[in-house]
Structure formats: C-alpha cells, structure tokens
Length: 202
Image (tube, rainbow, N blue to C red):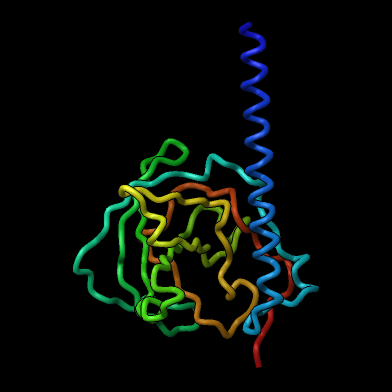
C-alpha cells in the first residue's frame, strides 16, 4: 500500500512539474510574439532565435508577504540612457528563497498609474549574481498587478523575469534597478543573455 501511495505521489509531482513547465513555455511564446506585434520593439522575427531562457523551476515561484507603503514621495529612478522616470515605492515584499530571507520593493510608475489600462501595474526590477555572466548586466524586470495582492500576499514568479529593451538595443529609457533590489544570490530562472548583436538606433 505504501508503494502504491509513493508511486501516486511521484506521478502527481511529475505531472505538476510538466504542467508548470508547459505554462512557462506558453508564457515565453507569448512573450516572443509580443516583440513582433510591438511597433517600438527592438527585435524582429529573425532576432527571436537569439533569446534564451533557463529551464522552468517552480521553486522560484514564491508567495510573498506584502507590506503596503503609505505616503511615499515620488522619486526619480535613473534610466540607462542617462535620463530618469518618476516612480514611487508601493510596497515591500518579504519571502524566503534558497534559504535566505529577502526583502524587495515594488514600484509604481507615476505616468502609467494615470493610464486606466496600467493603473494597477507594479514594477519589480532587480539585479542578482548572474548579471554580466549568464544574464543581462543591467538586471531584469518582473511585472505584477496590484489586484493580485490577496490577504497581504502576492505571487512572484522569477521564471517570468525578462530583459529590458536596453539589453537588445540602445535608444530606450530602461529603468536601472535600485540598489535595494540587488539580490545576493543567483536567480537561475527567467531570461538569459541575448546572443544577437546589440542594435543601434539612428
């Protein structure tokens, strides 16, 4: 009976792993197609072969505690082209990853918050120890939604971490991840280094 229970558990775990991998594969396919649809995109169809990703790992899909911040002042988040964009700190998120207690900050864009389509958009830029080695040196981004905060918790999936447009081309105003979101560990999921030639806008 124990053997049957163990086998059932093993099959269930394998099924979950496969279905999660399928979910991430679909997410990445949509992500690639969005480059083709976006007129501002730095990449064309032929460039997509130079996008690379780590294997999906559900251990990096975590449920974080959320602490909403009050009365935060607008600040200027530097961008890679030397300009800046207006943001304010929306919340702190706390969780444990790879045995380490981590706190990160979620941000809200002032300009996007005035757009009804993006009014709930939350921005999670970060750097980690894979930067300049396996991933883009300028860090990566994760998009979240304020409506996804339930009972002071939000799901953060690092498998969905993606590169800013500046990883592929100059000429974009990509925010530089603030120092408070510099993780002292390697996040070996999400998007890797782009292997195509970096483009230059005229």
